[in-house]
Length: 421
Image (cartoon, rainbow, N blue to C red):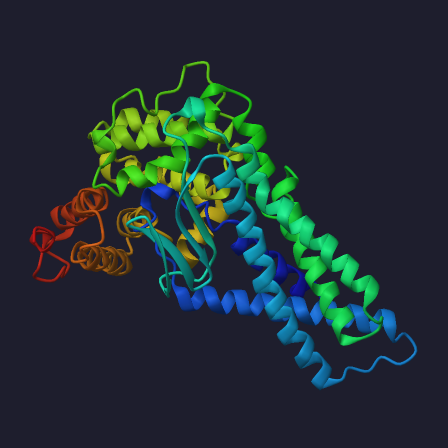
């Protein structure tokens, strides 16, 4: 039972963090759709089993009998309720975003995608991702940026659906499969509602909607950080890179509260801008000012990846690199089990090759990232200038590997020129 509860917590976390991947690299960090679908289905099944057993225990205390046909019916109904609940939750964000002056871009529920093109809304089934996503463009300036209702809208809609389900549970006969399924739907929506309206990391280890609201209201820098989070993806998709931005865009004051994760978000992007300009030490200095314990998990891993790569490739200090890797157990586990994004792959490849001296695995990981980048470069839909921010450090890593061990290792015959086309 404990294992099942942990699985449910993980699947809810997957749903919760769908928009938390660094939007600046949205196209570069595509999730494996089938894997995502399997995890969602897995969580749905486990959740249905738990609720079914609970209701059986409550309603049949004298005779605990599980009827297989009833379970299958509950399971199917639970999966449908999960889809409906998730769609309603996302519609809440969409509706309140539109009411706040946001412009619709696209709306995804699992593989179903609605998108805006030439002032019309189109629909298609897309397997590039299997999670929900909800992109809208906010106001043209940070001064006119409204965000409170948008971030709380999903939770509000989930709780409204909870009220409807409570009413239905009240009017349908008790101790039936329908009432059991409605109870499952009620639980799903309560969790989704809490995930937005309670400023807590207890359930998800990630900011909730209320966390974003409270953090953004604390300072102008924090509000600007949230605004940048919403707008930078659109800017970079127009074939820009971080070095194209003015120095004032991501700048934060010396006395700024970097414990606020939205202010830290600005600082991370300023570090990325300096890194893209080749000012590697200045970039690392900014990242070292951040309190990792105050950062959301994905931001924290991004910072650690950049610092790990910096102390191996840009400004070699293998002792510091080893400390970063060894002292962050969860980060180390995440890199090994699921290196998500090119920054993580590069960092792990560099660490394996230069620190652990595992040349074979380091080269294989670097070559895999390189081939993926080559495929991305051949995709006309991917902004090529922005892609250079991933290609250039990968080339630098390969060059450093070749310079230090070219006589004893086989890197293949293609070399750096494979990126030039």
